[in-house]
Length: 347
Ligand code: KG4
Ligand code: ZN
Image (cartoon, rainbow, N blue to C red; front, side, top):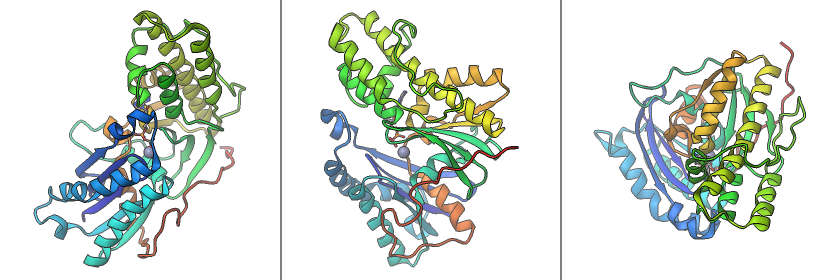
């Protein structure tokens, strides 16, 4: 069975073909980074228009991997929330048109379910072994930062989340303040490698033990004050120190809370996902800290961490395997766009 996945919730137009066991047949992404870079963030109206231009070529490229193209597609899975409504509508319209014209089943997929299950995608021979359930997942991207306990594909519990900015958003805003361009995560990551993470003492909010929510807006303000007081560092070493100290504050907060969530739930496997999971400091610090407390860290390959349609196709394929279907009336946010915060059970 070949499932066509379509993703257009934010600033990537993506289509992929995935088998129900997670095998990725194709995975195509048209990025809009250049479109939004001058504004330092995603502009919703520009995103919708760019999706309109890219959606059909991206789908055509994804199905071109199959011997008979679209004729070899058995079902369609499409992101229907959360995300920018105008952007979501583009992917949904394309998915519905394909499903209707070919009489194929269609399922809506929660974008966050896609990220949380992306660790099961199989891309090639060097795939890391997938984690057993339950696992704790740290989902940190430009739009979301939260901790979940994934007990099964259907039982996913929200444990904690950011009260304000997402971690990726904090990277992007700090980079803007430092004149480093958009998106900020990769460039701060690169500069931080040359700097001293302890050079400046940026705040680590909500550090109280037992609290597994996040807050990053104060950190961004601290960078803004730093720039106001000292200006944007002119020499490379000083800039690297600011980047390293900023990244260290974020990484420490993410890792401390993720491991606290493991301890509170008694779960021994931690999955890092979302665009921020690409951060080299986060990967390293998570692995170093986790090994000390007997937790195994799983990080999907970069292509599975950032927004992609393969994760949507896979999460959709799992819904289909459970016999679930949606109708052509599926709309943005029409099914479970969020998660209820769950009580951490005693084990
Ligand atoms: O998951 P993603 O591709 O899209 C969203 O759903 O938001 O994540 C994009 C975010 C951006 O904020 C970007 O700055 C951040 O992930 N990011 C990183 C790195 N690579 C991407 N943040 C820190 N370090 C990185 N290496
Ligand atoms: Zn995402």
